[in-house]
Amino acid sequence: MLNILFNPKKAERHPIEMMLVGLFYASLSIFLSLWIFPEYSSLVMVFFTVLSCLYVVQGAIRIEESKEQNIKSEKWILKEHYRALSFFLFLFLGFVLAFTFWTLILPQKKVEIIFSLQNSVVEGIKSMISTGKATESGTVLLILSNNLKVLLISLIFAFFYGAGAIFILAWNASVMGLVIGNLARNTLGFIALPIAFTKYFIHGIFEMLAYLVVALAGGIIYIAIWNGDFFKQAKVKKIAIDTFTLIIISIILLVVAALIETYISPFI
Image 1: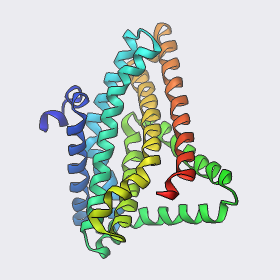
Image 2: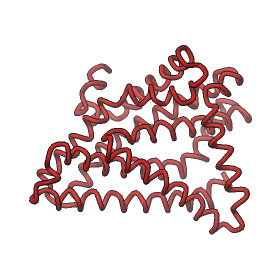
Image 3: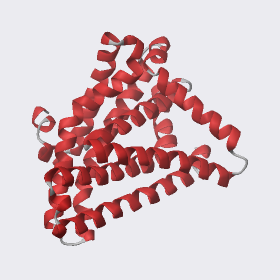
Image 4: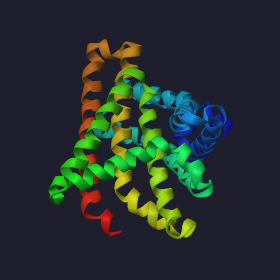
């Protein structure tokens, strides 16, 4: 596992193991935040989770930017990006599994402390949808506009901080873990987990893929500027086309997610 933690090339070849790494670091971050900053644990645990994975994520983005130098076609580079996306996705799944597990296992009072900010966000979203959905089409637009804001924030974080967009992913994982864990806790416990995961992952997976894709796009631009490739005429066009394509793909994924969340998820 240590080889994967500090070797981005190794990590891209073993995304399943990265899920275990994400699970371990998110779990460790929960207990460290409770021990060191109990009053602010809901936010500190996200920062600790991000810090623990920052090096390997930044390394993976550097690998993707280096592929821009030998780009053969847009189809080829998108296939190459699949490895990094699977790496990010499984890392995110590890985060979600950890936050879900501890939401189920820990006493309710501890959960309320650890996920206090996440719970306020969930309640805010519920209130916003209940007061604003006159029609299903209105709900789609409401969900889509909210997710587009998150998408823009992810792009900005990645553009200015490289792997900084992982903060958005870790935060969303903590919110999703809380929602899934509470749903299972309030029904049949661990037995209800498959249904709870299906209910939220059927649309959540598209949302996370959208954020991952745009984070990769922003990260590629960040590394390209850092390395000076963005200012080379021979490379800037290829980088611009690739990142623009990734951004369009992420927006399409969010549209699909909003439609699924409105028309399918409520019936699961």
